[in-house]
Length: 59
Image 1 (cartoon, rainbow, N blue to C red):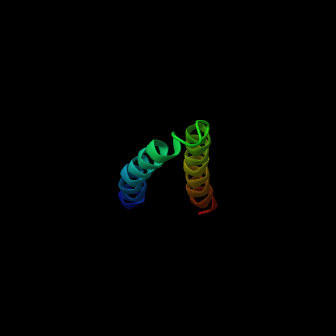
Image 2: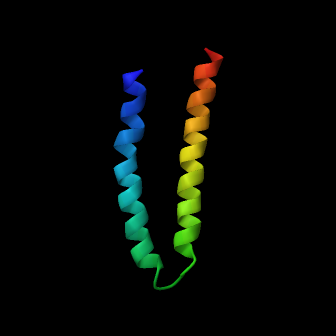
């Protein structure tokens, strides 16, 4: 069970860094780009958790 938690924890800092770097670049051109990006990030995390939960339920 522990090895399942390592992957999301390792990826989150990269997602946070990438989103903030993108937000700084996109804020000048697209004010609403930040909101859309966070929605996509949130949706991605939810989808990942849902997939992990689904796989766990199947076993």
